[in-house]
Length: 387
Image 1 (cartoon, rainbow, N blue to C red):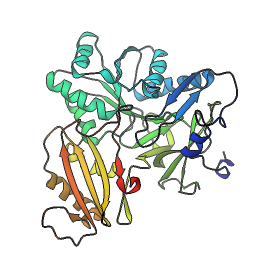
Image 2 (tube, helix red, strand yellow; image 1 turned 90 degrees about the vertical axis):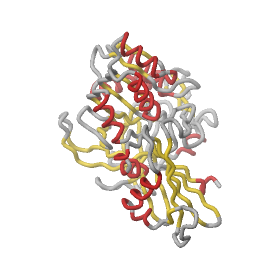
Image 3 (tube, rainbow, N blue to C red; image 1 turned 90 degrees about the horizontal axis):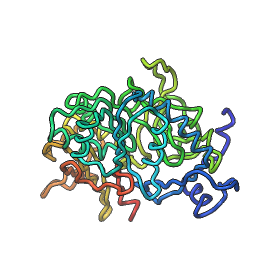
């Protein structure tokens, strides 16, 4: 591991160029076995990832204790709402993993509805749900609206962040005892997880499976406590191994003594690398914006930056189960973040002296566009890059 920082960083473009179907540079040449997965391409071009049978078995074996640590127990009845089909890995991987555990699984995939969830809870005693927050939070809210007696003991999620307001709502309205996150990528499977004692952005890491580094823009390791890009090195993947692969996420390592008994290096996960709002020479994390509006009951947030005539406009769009006043959210964010305080509050006849425009739109749950393959919402859309 001491020699690892001396190796070059592998980026997504190089991986795609030398992996099937574009190339065979990362192929071992062994007889084909296992599974082929496809990324959800929420923020880019789809990639295809090959897992040899041994790689697949390694992934499953390492995932089972992780799910136990997250709070699943023998006898749980789990509704799996993760997205599947067209080679997308969320459902394919977890169906295999849960089949090795003494659980009763109700695998609805993305076809789950409030009505089907209520039926599974009433008739089969389903007490746990796993899915992407952009899907399961509106699903659970509507199911609860239809039946306020609904109770879900455990909610496991991945793919995107879950806002503090939603985690609080689950505990207060559904009696949810465990709300846990798992970090995973189609490229390298599980990266980190939350035990039942962790919350927010902190995640335990599984270095014997995926070894994580935090580096600067040039691939140089950063000291603990400093935020940067995440690199992963796979220790148990022989077909298309990843060495110092830039997975497109950000975070930092902190020391944490967890009540579960694990002490030491813990990942504070900051979200996607493209989940950064860059405006007027400064930057804001999507996670910071979402946390700042949690007191308003906001479930989802998307930031879009556009440019016209040399002037940038930041539009923040939110989803919330209750109606919100855009001007109230806008003023709150401008007060919270000095960067936004320097923008021009967009309104007819407003003083155009500011360096950028700032708008807020408030929507009902489900209004923001979801990726059809993964169910995710793009956290930050920078039209200046796409132009």
